[in-house]
Length: 247
Image 1 (tube, rainbow, N blue to C red):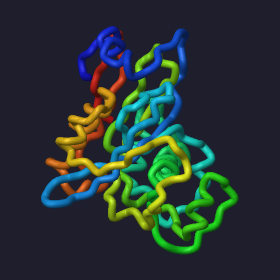
Image 2 (tube, helix red, strand yellow):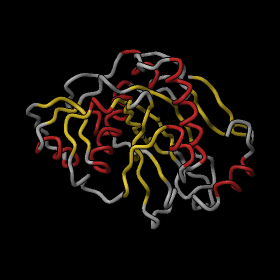
Image 3 (cartoon, helix red, strand yellow):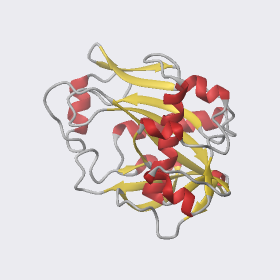
Image 4 (cartoon, helix red, strand yellow):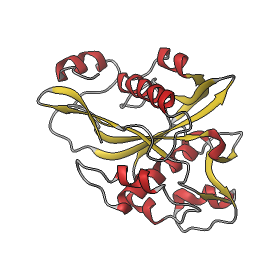
């Protein structure tokens, strides 16, 4: 998408995303790319969005959604690595430590809600937050130590919904519990683990294709996804053209 004009992006995505009138401020969102290494190949977890959704209907995406600022108050078994927290707090639009924490925890919460995968450590966990009762019920303490910041992208203007999305990643080994019935919501259907090459060939939004390319480059350079390893690209519209910065 780097270098494309807004008009070109609108044409390429008109069948995927509902367009709307008037300016809309992007909302914080986070998505989690779960990675599994099998047979010397990296696989990622993806699910298909229901066709009734106005945002990316029918597309294969990673689990994720809008950030709830209240997530920052959830107790964790282990915090974000300092390098990852610093990157999430980076300019532009400098975030506080609480905001960075909320962004990362929202990705973990959404992965449970949409895919039935609870990331953390086994152990007693209690909270009054309704959205986190699944972790309490299954005795998993959320943990951020395995989370890595991979990329950031802001939805171009003119969409029904706009998001300032942080694409995060974690290894499948960070999952403490997998629920066979899936998550409590019906946001995603047909969850599948796809090799990176096959994932790029799936019916995915253009930004997801770009992020998969960035992830493949990151893994080639940093196959262990070390804290602070590799660069974090930032895609956004500037002066009518989609650009790639580095945070």
